[in-house]
Image 1 (cartoon, rainbow, N blue to C red):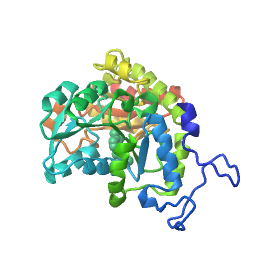
Image 2 (image 1 turned 45 degrees about the vertical axis):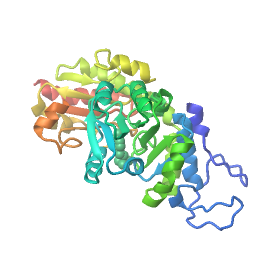
Image 3 (image 1 turned 180 degrees about the vertical axis):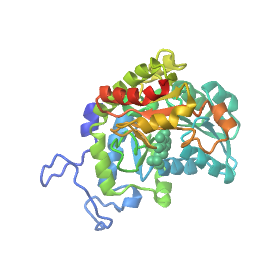
Image 4 (image 1 turned 90 degrees about the horizontal axis):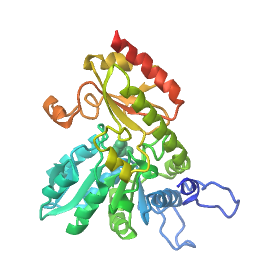
Length: 375
Ligand SMILES: *Cc1c(COP(=O)(O)O)cnc(C)c1O
């Protein structure tokens, strides 16, 4: 995987022998040209877009990929091209907030939507019109794991397109396509880029499925420009190294928080007591950089976050710097208190995106911030 991160897709420049892909900034390309292709960024076919697409396809063990201007551009294009009015789509209950809002939009356009929490619920929730099953694992913010092999089996038996959002896991920790899932989507804004400085999204699948989506993607216009592709390519070269450190820091923080008197519970799939630990151990190579924990005293969330000096309270995730957020106030603010309670998201829940800093420094920061809770 580390070799693919560094080398896959690189566009070598024969005129100089430079080891990095040049940036092809043009939006106008002479036609006819030696390649006899009508290059145009919005056609998703310019060299820097191809570089990132090839690298991601190699990492996800797919045949082809499309690179979009954001995770939501990737997800919306994929869903709008896979569904039509009257169809039914089944979504995992714990969805990324933006995807959840998009699902409301699908419903407004006459697409039937419903939700399921487990593969058994997916099985029970199928309808004759079901065309898409869409899951995210690990889920946000409780890090629940859904059985990708079971989902893909159900979908194959019924000719349904299975989609997995692999943003939290990354291709280093999990490859849904190898477990039989048809399509993987990424918010490359997060771990793939890894430096919290651009928005991007990627769809990876077979050449056939990508070939089906591509003509619509051109019309929807959500591509990524060459300079951002170049930055994303650069970020992805260190993905394996970064993910190793994210995994290690999250695991260390999860154990540390489990033993802290101010903490009621910790959600991390790598912990033996996590409800889906056995499943996570089966389908993941690493448990990821995301965790969440609940304070014993929910009244203390503000003072706890305010006392952190190194870790920044911020939305988003997957960058080299550690971030924390309060899901009940951010990603899940739109739910009623009853809905949040049903989803298992308490007011004292804190989500952590473990960065790649020295973990001793992170532990010291959390120790200081949690100490106030014990007074
Ligand atoms: C951030 C995120 C998205 C949306 O990606 P954007 O790049 O913000 O459009 C989708 N899914 C998951 C799991 C995410 O974390």
